[in-house]
Length: 136
Ligand code: SF4
Image (cartoon, rainbow, N blue to C red):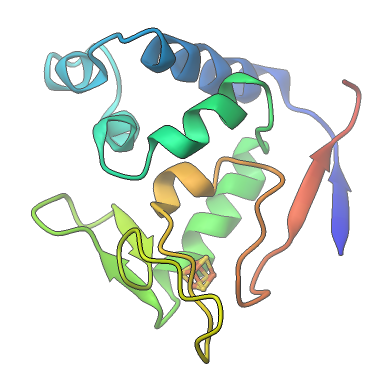
C-alpha cells in the first residue's frame, strides 16, 4: 500500500542537500562534532548509511512529519536494536546490517535513522508504509 503526501519543501531540501554533501565525501561526522550539523545527522557517518544516501540525494525523501511518525514507531518496536556505542536515539531494525526478511517477524537490518528518511521504504513488518512525494 502506498500513501500520498504533500511535499514539504523546507525539510526535503535540507535532507537532500546534506545527502549530496555526504556523497561528495564531506566529513559529516566532523561537522556534527563541531556543531555545524545537528546531532540528528550523526547517522550519515555510520555503517549502513551509504545505501540510503543516493536515494535521499535523488529526492526520495518523506516530510518531517512522516519521518517523526516512523521514528516514534521504531522507538516503540520490540524489533529495534540500539546501535552499539552510539547515542540511544540511533538504532537498527533487528540485527544491525543483517536482513532477515524470512524471519518471523521479519527485520531488514536497516540503519533506521537513514532508512526512515527514504519515502519509498516501508517497514518490513507493515508498521508503516511507503509514501510517494506529490508535486515533483
Ligand atoms: S522498521 Fe518496522 S520492524 Fe523495523 S524497527 Fe522499525 S517499526 Fe520495527
